Amino acid sequence: MEGKTEVIVVGGGLAGLCCALKLKEGGVPFLLVEASDAVGGRVRTDIIEGFLLDRGFQVLLTAYPEAQRVLDYKALELQAFYPGAMVRFGGKFHKVADPWRHPLEALKGAVSPVGTFSDKMKVGRLRRKTLEGPVEGLFSRPETTTLKALQDLGFSEKMIDRFFRPFLGGVFFDRDLGISSRMFEFGFRMFSSGDTALPARGMGAIPQQISSRLPAGSIRLNSRAESIQDQSVLLSSGEKLTAQALVLAAEGPETARLLGEEKRPGSRSATCVYFAAEEPPLNESLLILNGEGQGPVNSLTILSRIAPTYAPPGRTLIAAAIIGLPSLNEDQLVEAVRSQLAGWFGPQVSAWRHLRTYWIRHALPLQIPPLPDPTAPVHPVRPGVYVCGEYANPASLQWAMASGRRTGEAVAQALQK
Image (cartoon, rainbow, N blue to C red; front, side, top):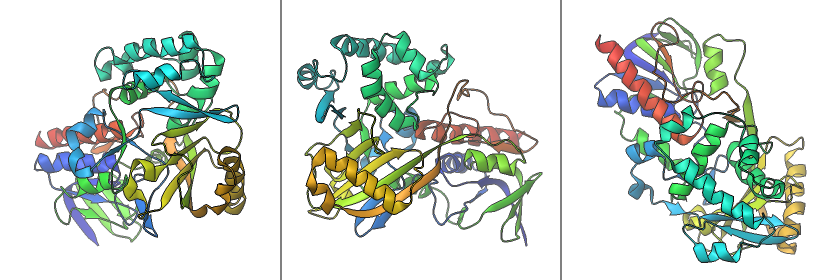
């Protein structure tokens, strides 16, 4: 069986959806094919016993320019985190507040063991540096690793180890901080200039909102692209789809496979363990960081404290985020997580009920220097074939959405010639 349309978009993650949205706005007929049973890629939410479980711990940074352009924040009913973090170190919890939004709380924590007083002053310098100029300008600055950038700014080793490693390690899944300094500065700017938030109905509400604006019948689920040739896509069902242009918007390794490239982009992995509890272990709506560097859990979030809709009434949802894929089976991992968290919160942890574990082999691309320039002109990688998303761009919701839009614009312009 063979079908034909103007453009075929392979992949229903945020990049593919935003590409499709731009094609629709340009009046270009398209068909989006998605291998799984729903759109969203890794940005999806499962409902288990009334709990909303995102597929791995994720957040929306409201300062993302592309998210502001595309999404209806009011309809998402965003629930914001407290701007700061709770750091576990030395057997105690230490609150690190954003001094620009909570100056009194920040003053109280100025002498905490998380970093020196000088470190707190250097955070102000870092903030000013990352807020200078347009967002796109961050990606033309001199580039090094994040660790080297922090050291060059004069941060102490204890500030790096107790705060930046767990915080940035949880964002980029790399506690060694080998990620590009450009990506670090971009992320720090986004955290500094907006809210960190969750949609009331889970992160999966983001791709659902975008897909609801696409024409009926323009998305085909459970349709895996087996291979591509010229401007044709062969599905695993045996069906062949042909178009004037193809857009590959899949994960980096999958895009490389479809392009026939033997070398695949490297990936960072992550694991997330969800628990249901009767009561929250802390009455805080912020991220809890492991500043001690011991145990599998890098960070913990009491999700129902931030977004009560994530749990049934009177219940608590807790997410333990782990960098990488531990070499344990699920029962062993849950026990190791319980053991670590019992040291934080005491015997109540034994009553927490394990809901689900997500093992995410490809959570993010490596994002090591040199980082792709997200503002570079979009060109086909071969005649009539384009790529968008993380294959050729920095990774984040911002750049996934922006690359989709920019690729849609490029395809529409090419078809008009």
